[in-house]
Length: 177
Image (cartoon, rainbow, N blue to C red; front, side):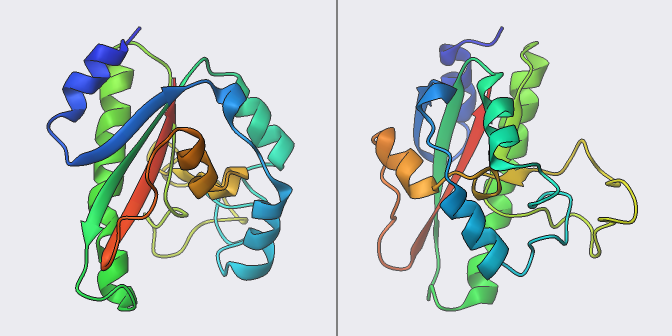
């Protein structure tokens, strides 16, 4: 079983801004977040990494509660203009690579885990959903929002700062251990 100290030592190689360990029971799951996914996100019902494919909010909550602990962490990306969506979206890749690396490390220490990250999966140009199974189920990561979590509230509850400031973005991932 991986320890907090091992995780803390491992993440030193990355630009992790803040992190916290806490219980999955402390997470508030919200149907309001799922409503936003359904009514305002173009990815809803188009990918295996988004609702409704990820399950109901209750199913997502139960899955999270099957783990003993959460490791929440953030990174900060600087951009010249937060309104420039191309530049903004290009900064997410580094955070996703850090998330995948930390998840891989935790697994290598013999600890079962599940990562939730920033956005819906974008591994494939066209998702196989719903006609065929996911081509890369071991690689895709579901977002915290898809599970019904309000990321800013989870950060606040863990005393993590969510906003990076002018021309910076805060990316947040959670790894359930």
